[in-house]
Length: 306
Ligand SMILES: Cc1cc2nc3c(=O)[nH]c(=O)nc-3n(C[C@H](O)[C@H](O)[C@H](O)COP(=O)(O)OP(=O)(O)OC[C@H]3O[C@@H](n4cnc5c(N)ncnc54)[C@H](O)[C@@H]3O)c2cc1C
Image 1 (cartoon, rainbow, N blue to C red):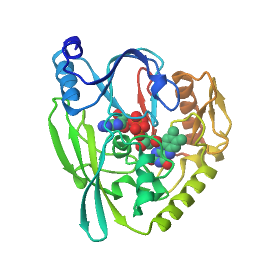
Image 2: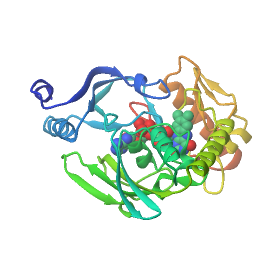
Image 3: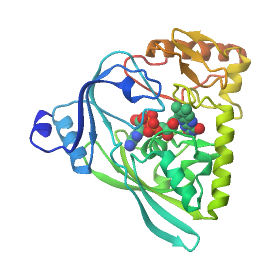
């Protein structure tokens, strides 16, 4: 790996023993051996080639807004494509629709804002969701009944051997807060289709969704978004609240009093606190309702929820 960095085979930022807590919205996470932010596809490829040769594990993250990372040291390389920020107009698919290219590192918020300004409809309901486009596609991010899958045309992915494939929407395996890409897929970009509309109307709808989201979710707090997936026909937040867990705390992590499916870092929270609270809430909801909650957040590092 050293020669990739030393011999000019990598453009971008490299960090060693970098705490993941600096790169997660929860502000939790131990140090990772190597963290890279490549600026182009060739640099990404060169890192992957070296990692494969040297058998170094690689994991991908975006803005870390849906991640819980354990407290211990993490072996391997963490890759984020936050520098893949280009956003381009591709074509008009007919006189009412436009196709836009978005790099994996484009913040979803910037993209929603761009659509609002230009009067492109289709992603108004995704306003207020943090993170990057790559993460949004991987997680099939959604809100108020809309999901990113509704507007994705295709994506470009690189596998761990550095090979690039274009996948059409129906090859991505989208489901509720999930995609089903082959293991080790790194999303490089997505082509998104939106509908031309009146900018005032798009802005109005976007603002209404944001107002609704702000009033129901603790957006300004340190969280990882919804901790558990909504079970079929039910809402995880409601179940947690009904089971009596609003405001319950383990160490530095608290079940939000605003929305019980958000767990908040109140200061010195650790990954172990978070996992302990998840286990307590999961067991409590099971006892109260018979329903087994499944994590929505992605967990990296030593601790795992059984
Ligand atoms: C306050 C708050 C509100 C939220 N509200 C919502 C909401 O309303 N709806 C919703 O769906 N989510 C919500 N979330 C969760 C989160 O914002 C989304 O899931 C977001 O799309 C994750 O993007 P990210 O870049 O932060 O991904 P990360 O958290 O960094 O990663 C999430 C997963 O995606 C994978 N991943 C990231 N980038 C790539 C890539 N380029 N290629 C391959 N895999 C990748 C990672 O490996 C990981 O498994 C919220 C989170 C917070 C903190």
